[in-house]
Amino acid sequence: MLKVFASLSLLLALASAQAADYPAPVEGDFTLKNFQFGSGEKLAELRIHYRTLGKPERDAQGVVKNAVLITHGTGGTGAQFLRPEFAGELFAAGGVLDAKRYYIILTDGIGHGQSSKPSDGLHARFPHYGYNDMVDAQYRLLTEGLGVRHLRLVMGTSMGGMQSWVWGERYPRFMDALMPLASVPTQISGRNRVWRRVVIDAIRNDPEWKGGEYKTQPQSLRTGVQMLYLMGSNTVQRQVQLPTLAAADTALDSYVDSALKTTDATDLMYQLQASLDYDPAPGLEKIEAPLLAVNSADDLINPPELNLLETGIKRVKRGSAVVLPYTDATKGHGSHTIAALWKQYLEQLLAQSAK
Image 1 (cartoon, helix red, strand yellow):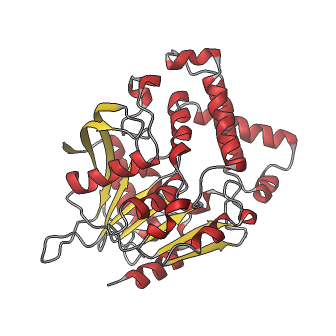
Image 2 (cartoon, helix red, strand yellow):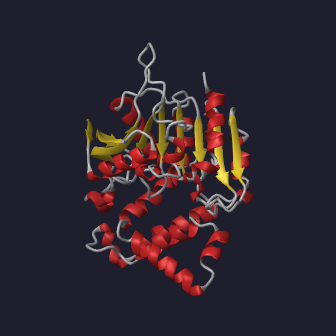
Image 3 (cartoon, helix red, strand yellow):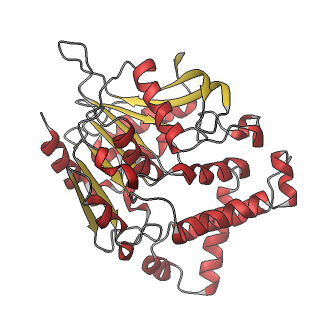
């Protein structure tokens, strides 16, 4: 069931869009009945929230030819892309993804934003979901809800970047091009797995968590958001910004206090657990569309010295990869949302994949 609506957030986005010179986003919900997860669990109604910009253009056969799917990172929402450094660079008139030319679809993944999530009421009884489930739900939103059966481009940041690899393997002929940002095409392991386990275990083993039936957020949530602050950083810039013990403590406390107002412990635990089924490495040869992956040299989550991206991309038939060098403009893992750093590569990809 598809439902489109207006809201306060939409009205704010309207004002922002007008100022930024790109079409206003339209928000909606799509409900999937009796959705079965890879775990075998079912949910009677799975709600997927989305935003669209622009209008679909169809060919003589009625196939949409200008649709672009963009997916967000862990803990984020589709709204995070409606920022000057992303939408202002890409969606504005003359931009690489000019929203007057493209039909842009921004989803809230399962467990995130305004899509169905544990904190809606089921808490720890919410089905355990993975990246495959998230991609399959996106596919059904597109095909059943929005009438989109082909994508000009799939791109994503961080978790959304990992889902771009999954898209290329599960639905290899559904898109013309793929652009994963801030991700590597292999199972979560090493330090990347360790920091996630630290957060998951801190919440799950906290007596205040009460199996998900807490009335107030458990203190372990503080550990979780502190870890997110740490891993999303650029070490050199953080040292410049926080040159003293007092400055570092003040910045961390400010970030945590703000994050605790909008973050739920069970939602966060589920979001991090969702990466358990991510492992595109065995199926990289299945990817058919041109794929251009972009990482940054100062990314603590996907450090280039591991050579995981460089090794994996060799097995993608039409794959290429770029690692942005460290500069004063890069922001560690968060470089994925600063489009000015990498939009030239997106332009190249679109030109390469044009039919």
